[in-house]
Length: 308
Image 1 (cartoon, helix red, strand yellow):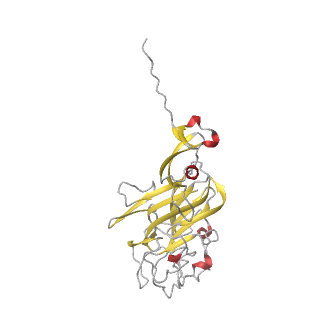
Image 2: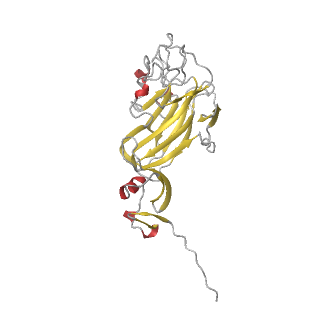
Image 3: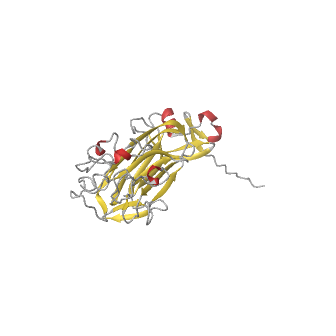
Protein backbone atom coordinates (compact mmCIF):
# COMPACT_ATOMS: atom_id res chain seq x y z
CA UNK A 1 0.00 0.00 0.00
CA UNK A 2 1.54 3.33 -1.00
CA UNK A 3 2.35 5.87 1.67
CA UNK A 4 -0.15 8.71 2.05
CA UNK A 5 1.42 12.14 2.42
CA UNK A 6 -0.77 14.76 4.08
CA UNK A 7 0.20 18.42 3.67
CA UNK A 8 -0.72 20.49 6.71
CA UNK A 9 -0.78 24.28 6.36
CA UNK A 10 0.32 25.95 9.58
CA UNK A 11 -0.27 29.67 9.68
CA UNK A 12 2.40 31.37 11.74
CA UNK A 13 2.09 34.56 13.68
CA UNK A 14 3.69 36.32 16.61
CA UNK A 15 3.05 35.19 20.17
CA UNK A 16 4.84 36.86 23.05
CA UNK A 17 8.51 36.09 22.60
CA UNK A 18 8.36 33.62 19.70
CA UNK A 19 6.87 32.81 16.30
CA UNK A 20 4.67 29.71 16.33
CA UNK A 21 1.45 28.32 14.91
CA UNK A 22 -1.53 30.49 15.81
CA UNK A 23 -3.33 27.51 17.31
CA UNK A 24 -0.62 27.08 19.95
CA UNK A 25 -0.73 30.69 21.15
CA UNK A 26 -2.69 31.28 24.31
CA UNK A 27 -5.47 33.81 23.83
CA UNK A 28 -3.73 36.48 25.89
CA UNK A 29 -0.45 35.95 24.01
CA UNK A 30 -1.73 36.57 20.50
CA UNK A 31 -0.38 39.90 19.28
CA UNK A 32 -3.33 41.90 17.97
CA UNK A 33 -1.82 45.27 17.03
CA UNK A 34 1.39 47.04 16.08
CA UNK A 35 1.35 48.55 19.56
CA UNK A 36 1.70 45.07 21.05
CA UNK A 37 4.50 44.17 18.62
CA UNK A 38 6.36 47.25 19.85
CA UNK A 39 5.64 46.31 23.46
CA UNK A 40 7.08 42.80 23.20
CA UNK A 41 9.88 43.63 20.73
CA UNK A 42 10.88 47.27 21.38
CA UNK A 43 13.59 47.25 18.71
CA UNK A 44 11.28 46.11 15.90
CA UNK A 45 11.66 47.98 12.62
CA UNK A 46 8.91 49.60 10.54
CA UNK A 47 7.55 47.00 8.10
CA UNK A 48 4.62 44.64 7.50
CA UNK A 49 3.70 42.23 10.30
CA UNK A 50 1.15 39.46 10.75
CA UNK A 51 -1.15 40.14 13.68
CA UNK A 52 -4.06 38.08 14.98
CA UNK A 53 -7.58 39.30 15.62
CA UNK A 54 -10.41 36.92 16.56
CA UNK A 55 -8.41 33.98 15.23
CA UNK A 56 -7.70 35.57 11.83
CA UNK A 57 -4.34 36.63 10.46
CA UNK A 58 -4.11 40.27 9.35
CA UNK A 59 -1.06 41.55 7.48
CA UNK A 60 -0.53 45.21 8.34
CA UNK A 61 2.18 47.84 8.07
CA UNK A 62 3.53 48.95 11.45
CA UNK A 63 5.39 52.23 11.92
CA UNK A 64 7.77 51.75 14.82
CA UNK A 65 9.11 55.31 14.81
CA UNK A 66 7.77 58.28 16.74
CA UNK A 67 4.75 59.90 15.11
CA UNK A 68 2.67 62.80 16.39
CA UNK A 69 4.76 63.00 19.55
CA UNK A 70 4.11 59.38 20.50
CA UNK A 71 6.49 56.41 20.29
CA UNK A 72 6.23 53.59 17.75
CA UNK A 73 3.59 50.92 17.42
CA UNK A 74 1.31 52.68 14.93
CA UNK A 75 -0.93 50.58 12.67
CA UNK A 76 -1.37 52.02 9.18
CA UNK A 77 -4.94 51.87 7.91
CA UNK A 78 -4.59 53.89 4.71
CA UNK A 79 -1.88 54.80 2.23
CA UNK A 80 -1.89 56.43 -1.21
CA UNK A 81 1.05 57.88 -3.14
CA UNK A 82 0.09 59.05 -6.61
CA UNK A 83 3.72 59.87 -7.46
CA UNK A 84 3.97 56.08 -7.87
CA UNK A 85 2.69 55.44 -11.39
CA UNK A 86 1.54 51.96 -10.40
CA UNK A 87 -1.00 53.33 -7.92
CA UNK A 88 -4.54 54.27 -8.91
CA UNK A 89 -7.22 56.47 -7.41
CA UNK A 90 -9.70 54.76 -5.06
CA UNK A 91 -12.92 53.64 -6.79
CA UNK A 92 -15.23 56.56 -7.54
CA UNK A 93 -12.51 59.22 -7.50
CA UNK A 94 -11.56 61.17 -10.64
CA UNK A 95 -7.94 61.35 -11.80
CA UNK A 96 -6.29 64.74 -12.33
CA UNK A 97 -3.04 64.89 -14.31
CA UNK A 98 -0.90 67.90 -15.16
CA UNK A 99 2.84 68.42 -15.52
CA UNK A 100 3.66 65.08 -13.94
CA UNK A 101 1.31 65.64 -10.98
CA UNK A 102 -1.39 63.02 -10.41
CA UNK A 103 -4.18 63.45 -7.87
CA UNK A 104 -7.61 62.06 -7.02
CA UNK A 105 -10.64 64.34 -6.77
CA UNK A 106 -14.41 64.26 -6.68
CA UNK A 107 -16.41 62.47 -9.32
CA UNK A 108 -17.78 64.90 -11.91
CA UNK A 109 -20.80 66.76 -10.55
CA UNK A 110 -22.87 69.85 -11.32
CA UNK A 111 -23.54 70.49 -7.62
CA UNK A 112 -22.01 70.12 -4.17
CA UNK A 113 -20.86 66.57 -3.38
CA UNK A 114 -18.37 64.41 -1.51
CA UNK A 115 -16.49 61.40 -2.89
CA UNK A 116 -15.59 58.87 -0.20
CA UNK A 117 -13.33 55.95 0.67
CA UNK A 118 -13.45 53.95 3.93
CA UNK A 119 -10.67 52.14 5.77
CA UNK A 120 -11.69 49.36 8.22
CA UNK A 121 -9.72 48.99 11.44
CA UNK A 122 -9.90 45.18 11.17
CA UNK A 123 -11.04 45.09 14.77
CA UNK A 124 -7.96 46.88 16.12
CA UNK A 125 -8.79 49.08 19.10
CA UNK A 126 -7.39 52.61 19.09
CA UNK A 127 -7.66 55.91 20.91
CA UNK A 128 -5.44 58.08 18.71
CA UNK A 129 -5.32 58.93 15.00
CA UNK A 130 -2.22 60.38 13.33
CA UNK A 131 -1.92 61.17 9.64
CA UNK A 132 -1.06 63.51 6.84
CA UNK A 133 -2.66 64.42 3.54
CA UNK A 134 -1.27 66.31 0.55
CA UNK A 135 -3.61 67.80 -2.01
CA UNK A 136 -3.92 70.51 -4.64
CA UNK A 137 -6.33 73.31 -5.43
CA UNK A 138 -8.51 73.29 -8.50
CA UNK A 139 -10.19 76.63 -9.36
CA UNK A 140 -11.90 78.39 -6.42
CA UNK A 141 -12.48 76.45 -3.19
CA UNK A 142 -13.43 78.78 -0.33
CA UNK A 143 -12.73 77.01 2.94
CA UNK A 144 -15.80 76.73 5.16
CA UNK A 145 -17.81 79.58 3.65
CA UNK A 146 -21.37 79.21 5.03
CA UNK A 147 -23.50 81.15 2.53
CA UNK A 148 -24.98 81.06 -0.96
CA UNK A 149 -22.39 83.14 -2.87
CA UNK A 150 -24.80 85.98 -3.66
CA UNK A 151 -22.97 88.76 -1.80
CA UNK A 152 -25.24 88.52 1.22
CA UNK A 153 -24.06 90.12 4.46
CA UNK A 154 -21.57 87.63 5.84
CA UNK A 155 -23.21 85.18 8.24
CA UNK A 156 -26.77 86.24 7.42
CA UNK A 157 -27.27 83.06 5.38
CA UNK A 158 -26.14 79.68 6.73
CA UNK A 159 -26.89 76.78 4.41
CA UNK A 160 -28.12 73.48 5.94
CA UNK A 161 -25.04 71.70 4.61
CA UNK A 162 -22.67 73.98 6.53
CA UNK A 163 -23.41 72.44 9.94
CA UNK A 164 -24.03 68.90 8.69
CA UNK A 165 -21.01 66.62 9.12
CA UNK A 166 -22.64 64.17 6.70
CA UNK A 167 -22.67 66.77 3.93
CA UNK A 168 -20.17 68.95 2.04
CA UNK A 169 -19.56 71.23 5.02
CA UNK A 170 -16.18 72.48 3.73
CA UNK A 171 -14.18 72.62 0.52
CA UNK A 172 -11.45 70.09 1.10
CA UNK A 173 -10.89 66.76 2.82
CA UNK A 174 -13.03 65.46 5.67
CA UNK A 175 -11.68 62.66 7.86
CA UNK A 176 -14.22 61.04 10.16
CA UNK A 177 -14.68 57.78 12.04
CA UNK A 178 -17.59 55.38 12.33
CA UNK A 179 -21.32 55.72 11.81
CA UNK A 180 -22.77 58.11 12.75
CA UNK A 181 -19.78 60.11 11.58
CA UNK A 182 -17.56 61.67 14.22
CA UNK A 183 -15.07 64.33 13.26
CA UNK A 184 -11.36 63.54 13.25
CA UNK A 185 -9.80 66.26 11.07
CA UNK A 186 -10.64 68.63 8.21
CA UNK A 187 -8.17 69.89 5.61
CA UNK A 188 -9.56 72.89 3.71
CA UNK A 189 -8.47 75.12 0.85
CA UNK A 190 -9.12 78.86 0.55
CA UNK A 191 -9.47 80.78 -2.69
CA UNK A 192 -6.19 82.73 -2.42
CA UNK A 193 -3.26 83.10 -0.05
CA UNK A 194 -2.12 86.67 -0.70
CA UNK A 195 -5.00 89.05 -1.41
CA UNK A 196 -8.32 90.21 0.08
CA UNK A 197 -11.04 91.39 -2.28
CA UNK A 198 -12.44 94.59 -0.80
CA UNK A 199 -15.97 93.72 -1.88
CA UNK A 200 -15.61 90.16 -0.56
CA UNK A 201 -14.16 91.27 2.81
CA UNK A 202 -12.09 88.10 3.33
CA UNK A 203 -15.10 85.80 3.34
CA UNK A 204 -13.55 83.26 0.95
CA UNK A 205 -10.21 82.94 2.74
CA UNK A 206 -9.13 80.13 5.06
CA UNK A 207 -10.48 80.57 8.62
CA UNK A 208 -6.88 80.90 9.83
CA UNK A 209 -5.90 83.50 7.20
CA UNK A 210 -5.34 87.14 8.10
CA UNK A 211 -8.54 89.10 7.46
CA UNK A 212 -10.81 86.06 7.14
CA UNK A 213 -14.37 86.18 8.49
CA UNK A 214 -14.78 82.43 8.62
CA UNK A 215 -13.74 82.01 12.26
CA UNK A 216 -17.05 83.58 13.27
CA UNK A 217 -19.01 80.79 11.57
CA UNK A 218 -16.60 77.86 11.83
CA UNK A 219 -18.45 74.68 12.74
CA UNK A 220 -18.27 73.60 16.38
CA UNK A 221 -17.55 69.99 15.41
CA UNK A 222 -14.36 71.17 13.66
CA UNK A 223 -13.08 73.43 16.42
CA UNK A 224 -9.30 73.69 16.14
CA UNK A 225 -8.95 70.32 14.43
CA UNK A 226 -8.24 71.54 10.91
CA UNK A 227 -5.55 72.69 8.50
CA UNK A 228 -6.18 75.17 5.71
CA UNK A 229 -4.05 76.59 2.89
CA UNK A 230 -4.53 78.01 -0.59
CA UNK A 231 -2.56 76.96 -3.63
CA UNK A 232 -3.41 80.14 -5.55
CA UNK A 233 -0.54 82.67 -5.29
CA UNK A 234 -2.22 85.46 -7.28
CA UNK A 235 -1.49 88.83 -5.67
CA UNK A 236 -4.51 90.45 -7.36
CA UNK A 237 -6.95 87.97 -5.82
CA UNK A 238 -7.97 86.47 -9.14
CA UNK A 239 -8.40 82.75 -9.67
CA UNK A 240 -8.57 80.58 -12.77
CA UNK A 241 -10.18 77.30 -13.74
CA UNK A 242 -6.85 75.50 -13.49
CA UNK A 243 -5.18 72.77 -11.47
CA UNK A 244 -2.73 74.70 -9.24
CA UNK A 245 0.20 72.28 -9.11
CA UNK A 246 2.98 74.65 -8.01
CA UNK A 247 1.97 74.75 -4.33
CA UNK A 248 0.82 71.51 -2.64
CA UNK A 249 -1.69 71.99 0.17
CA UNK A 250 -1.32 71.23 3.89
CA UNK A 251 2.46 70.90 3.87
CA UNK A 252 3.22 74.22 5.60
CA UNK A 253 5.33 75.38 2.64
CA UNK A 254 4.88 78.02 -0.04
CA UNK A 255 2.60 80.04 2.21
CA UNK A 256 1.29 83.41 1.07
CA UNK A 257 1.37 86.69 2.97
CA UNK A 258 -2.00 86.04 4.63
CA UNK A 259 -1.26 82.48 5.77
CA UNK A 260 1.28 82.91 8.55
CA UNK A 261 -1.01 81.43 11.21
CA UNK A 262 -2.27 78.68 8.89
CA UNK A 263 1.23 77.48 8.08
CA UNK A 264 2.38 77.59 11.70
CA UNK A 265 -0.28 75.11 12.84
CA UNK A 266 1.15 72.70 15.45
CA UNK A 267 2.35 69.42 13.96
CA UNK A 268 1.88 70.43 10.31
CA UNK A 269 1.97 68.43 8.01
CA UNK A 270 0.92 65.76 10.55
CA UNK A 271 -2.43 65.97 12.32
CA UNK A 272 -2.94 64.26 15.66
CA UNK A 273 -6.36 63.47 17.12
CA UNK A 274 -6.52 62.02 20.63
CA UNK A 275 -9.96 60.55 21.16
CA UNK A 276 -11.88 60.61 24.42
CA UNK A 277 -12.61 56.91 24.02
CA UNK A 278 -11.24 53.63 22.66
CA UNK A 279 -12.89 52.40 19.48
CA UNK A 280 -12.63 50.02 16.53
CA UNK A 281 -14.44 52.42 14.15
CA UNK A 282 -13.46 52.53 10.50
CA UNK A 283 -11.92 55.75 9.20
CA UNK A 284 -13.42 57.58 6.24
CA UNK A 285 -11.77 60.10 3.93
CA UNK A 286 -14.02 62.30 1.80
CA UNK A 287 -13.07 64.93 -0.77
CA UNK A 288 -15.86 67.52 -0.66
CA UNK A 289 -16.97 70.73 -2.32
CA UNK A 290 -20.17 72.77 -2.11
CA UNK A 291 -20.19 73.72 -5.80
CA UNK A 292 -19.85 71.91 -9.10
CA UNK A 293 -16.52 70.23 -9.80
CA UNK A 294 -16.05 72.65 -12.69
CA UNK A 295 -15.86 75.47 -10.10
CA UNK A 296 -13.82 73.89 -7.30
CA UNK A 297 -12.09 70.75 -6.11
CA UNK A 298 -9.22 69.70 -3.82
CA UNK A 299 -7.84 66.43 -5.24
CA UNK A 300 -5.43 64.47 -3.04
CA UNK A 301 -2.10 63.10 -4.21
CA UNK A 302 -0.90 61.49 -0.97
CA UNK A 303 -2.27 60.27 2.32
CA UNK A 304 -1.28 57.98 5.17
CA UNK A 305 -3.44 57.36 8.22
CA UNK A 306 -2.32 55.57 11.40
CA UNK A 307 -4.07 54.44 14.58
CA UNK A 308 -2.84 53.41 18.02
